[in-house]
Image 1 (cartoon, rainbow, N blue to C red):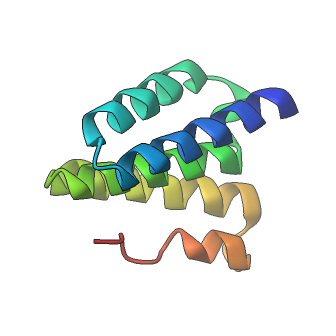
Image 2: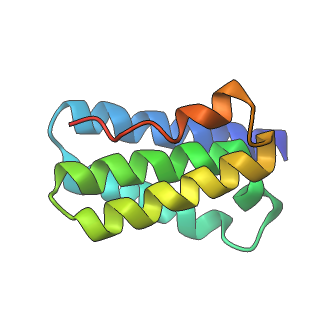
Image 3: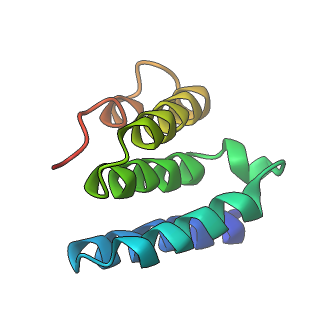
Length: 100
């Protein structure tokens, strides 16, 4: 639902604020809880889920967990591409390198 998608997007934004404050473990916990809550639902295919996985990839990157970062980034790209189309400018943003 639209309400659930907004909630997922807000959780990814909340996690980004925590990461800016160097609270990576807290951000990771929020993102993992959010991802788990949408698994197997229609929301898992929405672009809001892609933003959540992208934030999780950045969180892992900041924690020096490169394997998990790559896996989460690839998932975010796959979801965004499926939801928006491969040539959509928003979908292409997910392919950008992770911020350091």
